[in-house]
Length: 297
Image (cartoon, rainbow, N blue to C red; front, top):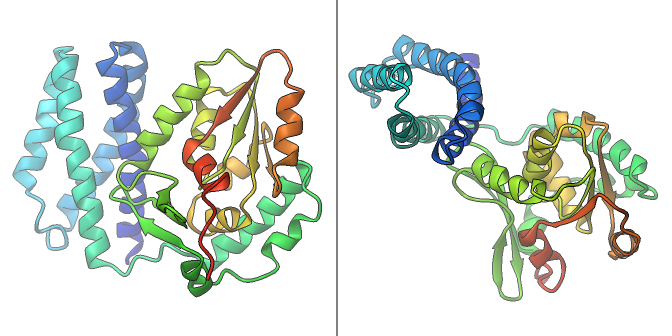
């Protein structure tokens, strides 16, 4: 994969996330919030359109005429302040285009979703984050290498989604439990974080880290709040370091993470809940953590 195609792929991930949020805001008539996102949408759209037009042979399945027609429609709807139509165009045309381009790139390229360098860097940062969060000897989690065959035997599956991010499923005694969507991971994280943020709190206690998407999103929605995350599955933390972009999350001093293998730290913390502290459950993680542990041969 060329550097240009890789950059386009990553830009698409970011753009889809922003577009989906703008559509939600438009639908809920929160026009100011939606319009604040539109300059970034326009900037990233220009980068993507330039990339597609500049490499017509690679993107031969993408109609340039349809692309320009879509762009003109979005501009016209924006100028007319027709936010119903604008939301439609963003959702039905632009969002669909982005997903199609992502799928095209993934079909054409041997895209490396795992980077040993990123994994090692994020394991180091996660170790320090866990230590700061009260985890004793967090180094033990990353002492053994990530073993794909062993994880498959234990019932874990890591899959690429249509937006270009990763999701993970855990095999359980009742079947598989997905921790994140197979489609628009960012949109799902947006809704999950919004459900948490409805609680008027200064500190949010989250049970379940998953691949970290909902945690990062809550930190964006509540930029002044503290976030404490409790995760009792060490393999999930390793998979998050391997397949999820955690750099900003791990550098955020307002977020603490605790590896809570037996759940004792979570229960003690909840039992001593203070005023303006909210308890938040990432339900897919809770399902997998409580009674539905991974199958082991």
